[in-house]
Image 1 (cartoon, helix red, strand yellow):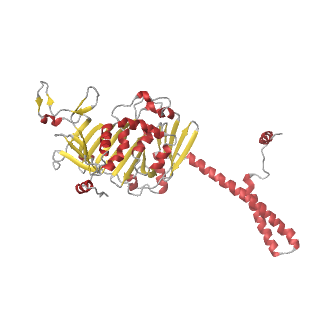
Image 2 (cartoon, helix red, strand yellow; image 1 turned 90 degrees about the vertical axis):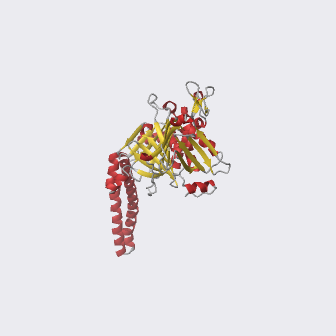
Image 3 (cartoon, rainbow, N blue to C red; image 1 turned 45 degrees about the vertical axis):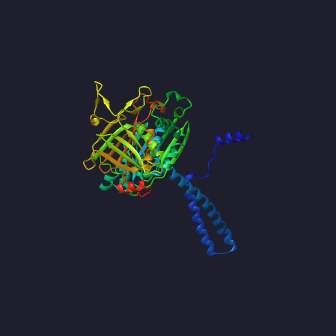
Length: 469
């Protein structure tokens, strides 16, 4: 008889112990109790006769009783662990979401990947990620629930957890109504690109490097979008303090990562943007801004100066100062489209009227740069007719990934000088392999906020000193 036949024959008649698992604890406890009594009797009467009468039975009772107690306690511990795991699985998590493609999530989070940790806030409408660097630059990315094939947020579970911990007071409910914690952003990005999701960022980067649209014929069955059809990513967050669970699956292969969550330390404060005191709002293609910042970066400047005016040229300009290779500037003025190349170029200094005569430059006061879709500049009287504000150029460069991936950018500035670069990123559902090909492509936003340089700090930076704290 072969070993395989012996194994199959044994499976037909499983072994049943003489003493069942449910009675091992009572038998083990009884044997240990009898061993203790027999040991006491042997201690009162020490003789050769008592060895056979009390000593040997006490040893046997102690040995068998210890074995049964170990088995019984082990079975009980396993049973309790199994019950706790089942109870854990039965409890609905606070948050659960499934994405059929991690490319969208990775692209948005990589835009703000300049910091190792991120503050995460889970809301019924999506997940908010926030990162900061020395409190002078902040990146905000919002993963809308439209990016997920399924999105579940249990508000009742959040309230129940607060009732158990005793933290459901008015103050805490006003400040953090939804679960909020800190997680390692670098670890999250590494998790999302386990299956090579980072390869999908290349088309967006190449597209932003050139104003011309990408070549659609470059896509094939062997490109990254075609290889991401059978992948899914599941996010779960059970209760306050539990790790953020991420499960990636691909054709039956599952990878589960649990990222440790940390409590807020009180330093996560958003850079305030006074929306009621906006003095500059410019909406344009993100590729134009990306190309301008890239060109200015060739001179390695320390300060980026933004200048905008609604009455005189240059209407909108970016200039770099304080670098080792002199100064440079990029101006966005009244431009025309080249009929041959389709690229914009600077127009003449005069405009021809309908009758062919030239008009004065003052008639351009209501015009705006052609590259902009919205151009609203209303400086306060203390600034005159032109807005000028300086920012650290290396901090502006932290938004380069968002510039490369976005379709449009909204440049806003308030009276305090806080700069907001809000990027609109559209994803193509057809290329990502999702089933909702007829639906409207989801639109996501990534917001960067920058604290301006003071006049004395900007002057010192132009002299080559790094003084910003």
